[in-house]
Image (cartoon, rainbow, N blue to C red; front, side, top):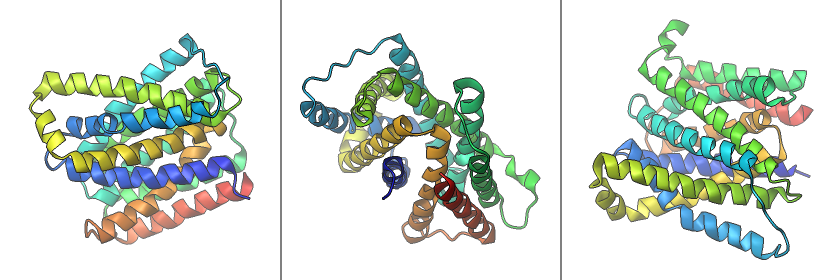
Length: 297
């Protein structure tokens, strides 16, 4: 029987791929910041409904968040906003499938930071799976016919910065959710999600208003795309948050790289882009790492 954290991760990876495609489409009409706001503005009602439905089935559960919840949760909010803006900007510099893989440096960063700063434990074979997946993503990111040095460019800087922000965000989410001390990881993750989406909506809304409030008009004019982004974002975040609560963040991130397969499919069939030999070899290593993780876990 498939483990619970695996199912939640696969849901998250699939929804994140679809949501990212929606954000790329919306970014053609609004800035990266406004496209990021759409994720939280249109997603907040669904996050609150999700929490209410879960909590309604557990009427006697009392949640008492403290500083150990609020501090990492707020930090995760800011990091996720910054990472999302960097990610949307990244897609304007390189093609959709390849550009997205720069961000996947977060796999290795999550593992290293988790071990050093958060005391997470990773097995020897677990490290092998993480390294194989990371190497696969490096291959995917290397333009055909060029040396490794060609990896460093503006897109790489955006991708690595986004990857670092996403990795720290994942670890903070896990820490905040576990700090609630609930026996039900799904409810703990839903509470963390609802709190974070609320804070992120307020943060990004204030930022858009200060920068260019006229974008709000365009955003609401594109409400259908915004609604699509909001729904898929909440579904994806619910998957990530629950998986992080159940399992080591580095393992979740490594398995989550099946997202690349969905990204590649979207890239080929929707954006009409064609991956090269490096992308195919990198994908093979990535899949090998993910399979190894599932076999040894």
